[in-house]
Image: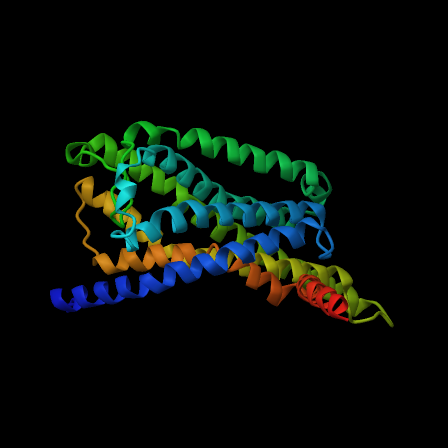
Length: 330
């Protein structure tokens, strides 16, 4: 039996009350942690290859931009709509939409490109030397950024310049007859298929192939070691693969867990307008927004947990100003 109307309404109200605190706190945490991540990774002292560093810095930069364009400039004004009522008179929403959707696409597809890079590095040693380079990373990231920008220019013409302070995909003012038209529904449906549905499937596939490759390689190396006499049981190659695998799986798994609700809600809403009615409670989409934005703040904590040298750099960054202040006082 489904939830009753009043139960759904109470859950929705509870979530909206929680967002009043949740979004400002998320912004207060997300901006500095991503800035710190960019600064630490850019120094190149975390023991990561230049190729991996490029991907992680790009992911942190786009996460920071998503926090600015989506969380700070969209969600917080919606939650505090009385205080941001003046925003309705600002005619920049269509430009805001282009930037927001472009950086969101980049954030998602950078995760895919990083996953693919690690798949090549772990599973195909013959291609690793050619593909897993800093130059290739720069080309791939630049291509994804360019394509994302051109793909989302259409929003400039589909939205009006006025803001509509409502927590739905249409945060810009759109005429009802346009938003309910078949052309609009197909366009937006394809938009959410490309981001994040296809990336979601690609990450699942690449991770599955990576696991399969690691298992096959592990069995082969164990057989070789068992035939060798006096060889150390420690295998540096497999140790490096294991570290790379942990970083890859935690980052991609974090993305999938925190994006899945948003993805399902977005696609089902478009299917509804295409004539395939699938009803979901409004509070489910609210949870999707909250989890999706949380994903922009979690990678730093993942690096702290999985990367010892990153932890050391964070500690050094905290100790340095304290030591300087103590020296000045003395």
